[in-house]
Amino acid sequence: MNAITSPKPEPRLTSLSHGGGCGCKIAPGVLSEILKSGSGMPVPPELLVGIETADDAAVYKINDEQALIATTDFFMPIVDDPYDFGRIAATNAISDVYAMGGKPIMALALVGMPISVLSTDTIGRILAGGQAVCKAAGIPIAGGHTIDSVEPIYGLVAMGLVHPKRVKRNADARVGDRLILGKPLGVGVLSAALKKEALSPEGYAQMIATTTQLNTPGPELAALDGVHALTDVTGFGLAGHGLELARGAHCTVQVDWAKVPLLGGVRELAEQGMVTGASGRNWAGYGSSVTLPAGFAAVDQALLSDPQTSGGLLVSCTPETVAQVLAIFRQHGFEAAAEIGEITGEAPGRLVVR
Image 1 (cartoon, rainbow, N blue to C red):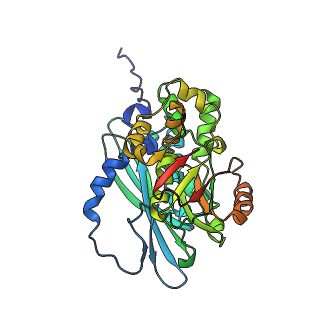
Image 2 (cartoon, rainbow, N blue to C red; image 1 turned 180 degrees about the vertical axis):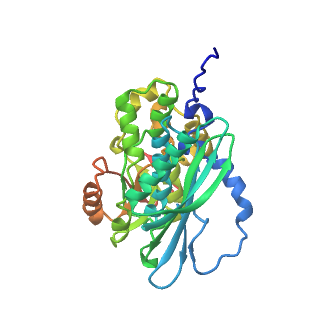
Image 3 (cartoon, rainbow, N blue to C red; image 1 turned 60 degrees about the vertical axis):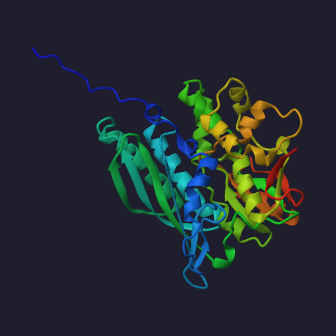
């Protein structure tokens, strides 16, 4: 009588990726060198936002009332549950539309899967997670592209619309503005703990809740005259994306570290060594442009450069607009949103932590 063999168990999704989520971004210093060759490209006047200031998405003016936002984002698994991986990747990709002040209109799926390793059921669950988030955002997945890949890769091309006068770039912060962060930091730390099988069920639930929360306040924030600049905090961490804002606007970003919200338990996990390699690569790429206070702890530096997958919006607004901005965040369920600093002119192009 022939023995009945059970299907070969599939590996953990995170075991198939050399870097998960936005932690697998190319280091900022290396990326800067790579992109130097594109600086001489022709730029049509309709292109309102291109690659000049490392903004979140491209914006192309269609007419006096509409501009098209186009962006793409994809990465390897940050979690092992395929449905959650799809949700996180889709939320992260759509975030860039919100970060420009726009409303998403449709998406295309980008799918690279090791078909000899993962079952069609697992791959289907990844895509279903992405579809669920797009449904929540009110947009269709209207197409896409698939390849057989060594590592699992999933993401979206996301497109949206915005009024040309309401485009919020990361380069338009003004001296005197206040900074507001929409989500707490620490996703990279939680992902490192998960990969080392040291993340509690409560920690995992917290990680999924923050990474699948769509940055829906974006369009309402963009409608406020007192909001000057918007970006989202993702793979380069708070310090990296704060520096992009500072360099684009030729100003100084000052961060009051004590006011920066953190996800529950991440400081303790970071103290135990649960940090990503991307955090160190981030710091190596831009740390020389960051001024830290005396005695700033190594764990705080790691959190400052911690890569955020599907992180929060970073808003630069007038002092008079702070209450409105926080109220909009609260209305959309962002209870941890907080004022974390200000824009000054004392050291243009730098981030200063106090």
